[in-house]
Length: 285
Image 1 (cartoon, rainbow, N blue to C red):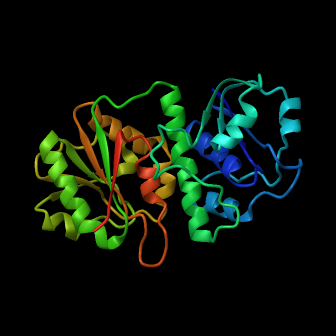
Image 2: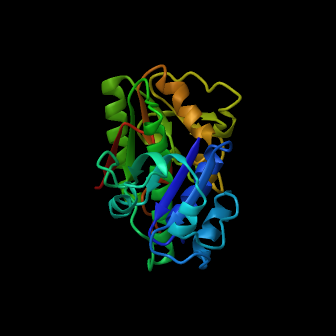
Image 3: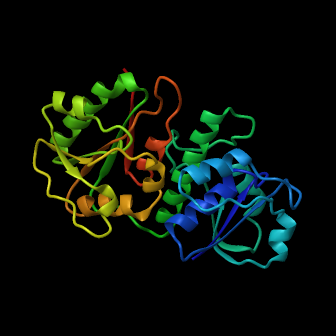
């Protein structure tokens, strides 16, 4: 699989997405460039630091101009643009077989990334999470991969919205006969789950590539067996998708993610945990 990524300056969005694709698809060939940048400019140091914290490879230090990309004769199976404006600038080229944008109409509005240039760090990190989520979702949809049964994400906008979010998720799960998965690997929702009379079933999510997850009964919720210091690294791997595939091939799935925001900062986890879901419900009290 050969994928090209385009953004405005090739300093944050496209080089970061390049790392995400290589992490998720290690056998892929990926190249990124900017449509409004000179070749060899410094890429974002903050984006590079986020990549390191999330367990991705080292981000390239210098930008690639559109001219250098075209001269490389890189023929992509798919070209992914960071937004519609960038897509309009590149879609007439013969450098790829198909084109997509990370802000296409099929992408949920809560997931569409913005150019993080000039944002403060927590917002910047949030936009990188959106880039990561949408680029993986775009590739899955381009490949024609779909969930066999519905997968629905319930996302609390803030930490105070947690009880109401779980109540909505439990109601939906009962209505459609879905299993429930706690997608907050940083701080599992133990107390809130017990208040909804749900029994936590522990499983090491990172083993999903090698060990079958447990069967879940009515009134049970799957949770990770311990807190993950860097859940972003896990969500960007194929193991998380394999876990959801295991259950969604057997019936509907409801995922309860981390909040969008804690008291101190934005959290990127929910954007990453819900990238392949069929529907997203963001709950505010």
